[in-house]
Length: 304
Image (cartoon, rainbow, N blue to C red; front, side, top):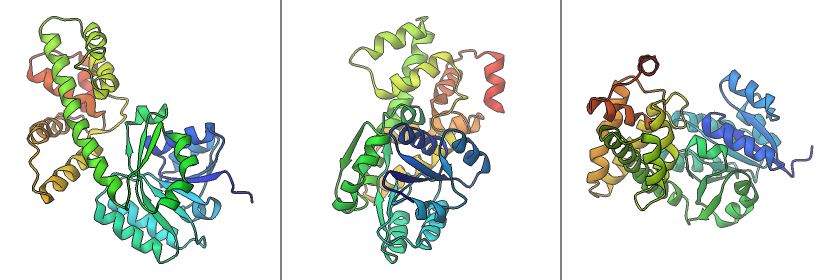
């Protein structure tokens, strides 16, 4: 079998499926696996080759990308890949997980001559669909260089940051800003609504000025529409990232007062029933605190 243009994808959720779609459009043969049968079926309908296990993915592609939700998932996948007879395999680990967990997976794979790269991504699920992602690549430079074509197939830019683990550290910094800017965007739009300004016009005007941010541009439209059901980052998943950032800063004895101030807003979104909706739903939380009425349809949607 010719695997010259083949790439593997393990994890076909919001991010993984978007990356896989872009790789397919870039001309790659994508072999994918997800623990959910429905995700595998959807992937196959888009032109991907659905595998029955992570081990099968590794046997059919020289480079495998992982996009995983938890430490347990990474441990399972590392164990599976270590059983694949594929010395020289490169695994591009894109998940936002603790560095210690990634280091453990790297050691498991290294014993089988498999190289694990730490390559988290900057961007939401919506951005992933349009290739508006940045790759924070770290690990052996030779292996990262071998993945450049793959990176270019699903991202807007990629950066080599150095030794393994540098990528996830950079991701924590980027996500700290995302957490703050997302709440700041929501706060500004809620204030605009309370002031009687047209939300859509406010978004258009402010997005074109000095006060703009990528979060205002990406999540502002759903805040204006007051509808967060099409999640690009679910609140319940984002909470995992928030805890990782807090732990990272604590380990370094580094104060993060703005981050600490915005964290309870995400917790309130969980409590209000937005766990499976987009993290832009902090706009609804702040709107309700400000006494802004929501429509009955949208209020019911938030509690499902």
